[in-house]
Length: 187
Length: 187
Ligand SMILES: [Mg+2]
Ligand SMILES: [Mg+2]
Image (tube, rainbow over all chains, first blue to last red; front, side, top):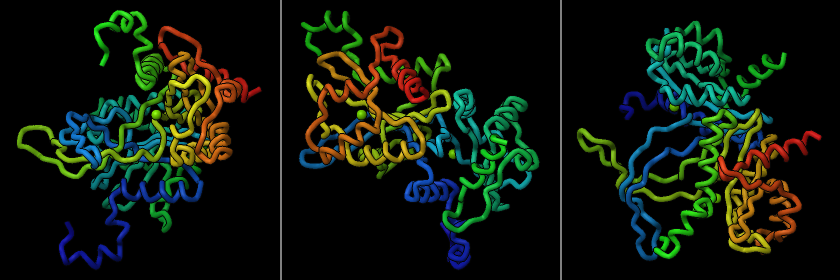
């Protein structure tokens, strides 16, 4: 998608070129390989309508449709804690639009909290190149306050979040922010 | 798939007609609705090769293939515990064949244990109509002992498992067996 003009910049700031989900997947692979956490992206849910079973070759799905996900993007376990989160990015600099969320995601995160899990959202402000772990309890509060419309201000998010510091390996080392959060909970 | 002859029996023993995964899904729906646990089946992972985007209708996947799952069937959170398990059934009455497992499932369960999660298998002996929560630590031990071949004897499984009692709603109330296990851990 990049034009020739941006190629050099793309290489220099290659991490900026990665989408948020890609950065999270790379972090998860790093965490798994280094035995730091076991967190996976959930497969995309689809409804399969038709499958061909050709002789001597793999079953081929020939008709299927994307299904609305009923939960979040990622879950897993970190030092005994159940981890559950969604990844969201925005180009906005001053606020995060609530239309990025769906009621079922809010409901799922509320269910996770009620069972003692760590529910949150990783929010990337792409224009600012800032990443935050925003706890689900605050998201749910804002969602109810605004009835799912409008947006959450940048200041509100920053106040209640744990910032993911700039890092090299992995580029989005979100366990650092989780550690800060857990230290705060256990204080 | 049932012939006319078995229809009446199928109705009478309808729970026996349900596959193990179906019973687990019903239990999970019950747990979610009653705020007892948040446990979901992971979607089947597929590799999407081609998608059509017809005007005015839903995107249609026209070519995709099933992908080997890299983890287990189910995960979630129960009273602060990370839960991760696979569902397996056998018609055998005296042993459980280890060929039902794959190395990646064993590795995943070992990773889960190393992060303090509760990893296990729900094993159904269909001919005996007995269901067990079999802790992953024992499964991993047997797997290494037998190098993934042969089988685990029925007695070994029964000795190290927590039996899922017969129940009506849900028919496979596996949280009862988990409670027994957790009480044993906390003793
Ligand atoms: Mg997302
Ligand atoms: Mg299975």
